[in-house]
Length: 218
Image 1 (cartoon, rainbow, N blue to C red):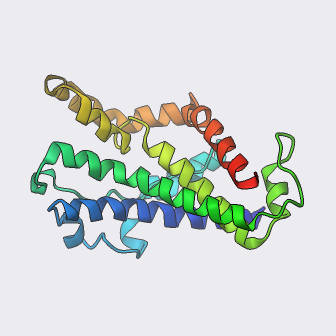
Image 2: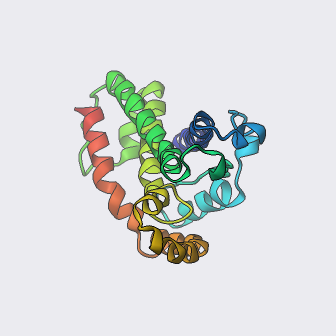
């Protein structure tokens, strides 16, 4: 199981970096070069490390026996530099989860091609036991797909500072936005309670996880 954890954490690290870089690339496309000037359009992991999202949150998830998730330091975006700030900030926000879902699909297809049906996966089969019967290539691709599924769904939660909150900001009537701005500073507290007390993510993610597994082993 140690090797699975190493693959999982490595996959998580790569996925969150690609997630954040995608935000900066789309912002640059729409005219905001803030991320580029800050040196954040890079695959070097050091500029992207966030103490809470990259270290503390994954550690707490392990202790709470929840799916291990996290995020990198948010890529800086200056909405005023965008040509159409309110509409284009929605695209900048949602491209992160979209990137994760694309990576998930590509990895899942690769894992499906490498799948060896030496053991059928069912509700009574522990995921670790299933993976042990597969090749290293399958393990890497499957866990990378799983990580990107978790990240994509996680970041679509409509809780600041997650990307799903950008959708809320786009659809809220302008007169309601001042109230929303007052809620935003409490986003981390709401997120913490939702994850570690209400298990909202676990409830949401399990059906999608099952679909992913069924696709790969079909």
